[in-house]
Image (cartoon, rainbow, N blue to C red; front, side, top):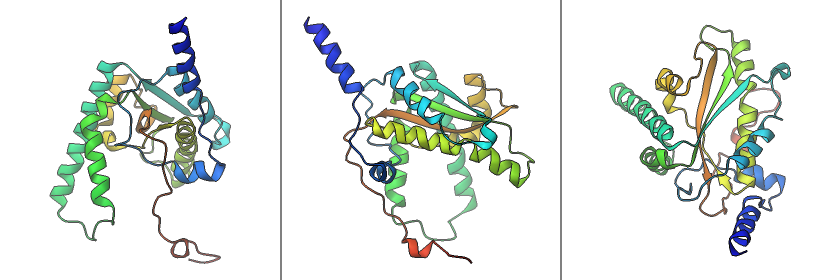
Length: 228
C-alpha cells in the first residue's frame, strides 16, 4: 500500500502544471543550463506530451517536415556529449585564430560563457537529449527556400520549450555540435543527405521554477514603423 501511495504521489507530481499566464510563460521561458536538475529522471511520457504540443506549431504548407531523435540511453548520451564538446573545441580554436572580436562582448557574456562551460562539463549527465531535424539541406538553396525550411521547424522547437517550462522543465537551444554534424548523424543514424539537424536540446526538470523575464534591449531601439 505504501509503495502504491508513493507511486501515486510521483505521478501527480509529474502531471503538475505551473500556474503561469500566457504572458508569464512567454516571458519566463529561458535558456536553462546550470539549473537543469541532473539528479531527477525525466519520464518519456512527459517528453512525448511536450512534443505532441510542438507538433501543433505552424509550418510551411503544413508539410510537417520535422523529426525528433530523443535519447535517454546513458551510453549514447555520453557519445553525443563528446561530439558536442568536439564542436565546442572547434569553435574555440576558430575564434582564437580569428583574433579579438571587433566589438566588446555583451554585458552578460561572462555569465553566459560560464553557463556554457558548465553544460560542456555536464551534458552527458542531462537525463534526455533531443536532436531536432528538418527535411532538406540549406546548401545552395535560395533565400526563400532557406527561410521556408527554418520557418517550418523554429516555431515547433519554441513550442516544445514552452511546453517543457509549463511542466517545471527546461532546455536550451545548442548548436555547437553542428560543427561535427556528420559525426552526430553517424551516431544516431540520421540521413544527413536528406535532413538538416537544427540543434541539440538538453531536457531536464529545473532546480526551482522562479524564472524571470530576461534583460532585453529597449523596444524603442529595435521597433521601427513604416521605415528603417
